[in-house]
Length: 298
Image 1 (cartoon, rainbow, N blue to C red):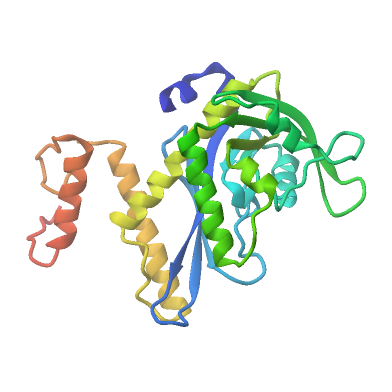
Image 2 (cartoon, one colour; image 1 turned 120 degrees about the horizontal axis):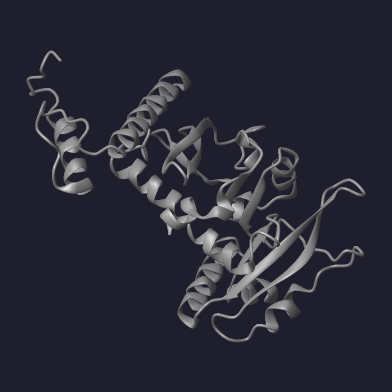
């Protein structure tokens, strides 16, 4: 799918970027939380930018505003990025978005300003695998501040829908709230909001494109399992930043090395055979035994 997206003529003038964020906490009950804002380029299969901020305070929240946007960028994100200001920011920079819809953060409207009846839209697609799209508008806080988008849906299978509803009930119970009928109905669907043009990106292409968002989840798994960035063993801001940037340096270096397997190896002229898994095992071995290894001068 990645090769197809990269080679597809429709994507020639675009750069597909998957964005997400993760929290890293300092030790102790009252340790500071830090947020890593991460952008993964699917055309290069590596991180194209990242930013480290505190987890709380002005300008630290998860949003597309944390990234530099260039004309033709397609930003893929989860519900955390589904906000009007984020979508408008990308549009003003000449980019496009494709994000999961957040019903609580982004109401949808018709062209005349009336509320879009998404519940009725859902009910018009009663069978598993049914897809649909509609033209909608999203509104900002000031009068006349609005953008035209597309809402794209595909109905899940029963197992996936049931799993989503269990998660909704679990989260609502923690917050002592009762989920709305619309929230439960939305569990039956993958619901996307996009500003990509219909004449270039059909409904099927939008749905296929969003499936590639999983790549950033895999990148975070590598961050936490190989670079071990999940737990921050520092207490001061300066040492925490140094530790986090050091970890990101190692991670980006490994990404670059792994894209050229066999071109570099700590075992001098020995080729790195065995594929990516063996390569990672060797890197972990070097890190684990770095104090006892006799490094060559070169």
